[in-house]
Image (cartoon, rainbow, N blue to C red):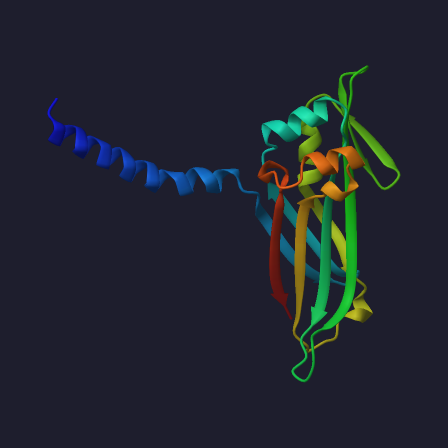
Length: 185
């Protein structure tokens, strides 16, 4: 093979690698696959679904007995033209996912409720989707005003055991964060 062909082949490989690398990187990012804010007679409710895959290092830590904490935070704001937007309500949900080596099951804890799952995929599906989460009471949402919801979903490393927090500082595989803002009337 001549030097000219090698140079062209190298250029094409570099081009395709540069073109495909952003697509591969986007596949690993968490994203909302469903996000719906609905007003009802019970108040303001949020239904969402998040897609993500646990990186190998995070999954390995889970198997070795380190519990993972997933946190969803939602804030409801009312638009104001004369000052900063008014915070109507802030709600938070925390899920704890732990592996039980004796039973070889995954346990998801939410509030005071525990549920066991046979596989990690089943356990993660329980923390990826929320339906009918009440964000505000009906009287908190003013008719005729513009409102919006700021939502974040993350793997909270501040709730991990202290020695783990020191060891994972700056490692991108432990950064799982997705945010969204949705307006409603």
